Amino acid sequence: MTYVYVLKSLSRKYHYVGLTDNPARRINDHNKGYNKTTKPYAPFELVLLEEYPDRISARKREKFLKTGKGREYVKIYGQPCAVPLKQVNPHSG
Image 1 (tube, rainbow, N blue to C red):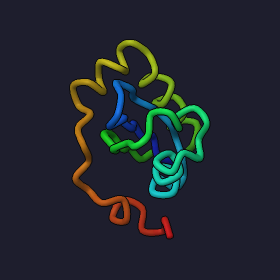
Image 2: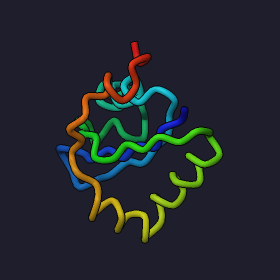
Image 3: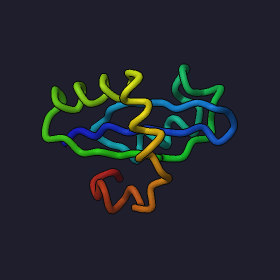
């Protein structure tokens, strides 16, 4: 499974769209400042998490969410996620 996720910065007006096979680890990496692109915007909260059967379909969705219409979708439907990541991906370690 591959996941597309959207993070919202808690310190600035900034959203980050990415994809991963391990959302818990990846979001933790963003919050710890391990990603050069997002380090200045940490900490983050997860506002959207979608699961896809393969990387190709996840990449298509990620590309859409980075467009103008995709950003509008995130504004409307992107809310802080109430589901703990361990329930979404029990193999996250």
